[in-house]
Length: 86
Image (cartoon, rainbow, N blue to C red):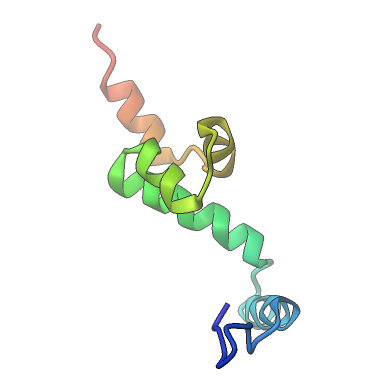
């Protein structure tokens, strides 16, 4: 992340982890880079409704991995129910 002159990261992953958890703690939210990844992929799926695009964004080869990262939101449940024919 944030490559330096030699192409190596100039900010270590552990430092980024500390920054994110500290910001979350200050805001009263339990957060981590991994949780942010889940959130970002869920939001991307909500916006696009395209699992393949989100899979590519995440760099996954298996759609079941991407599906595991995303969460079912209330809006998606509502959309699913509204799509049912009676």
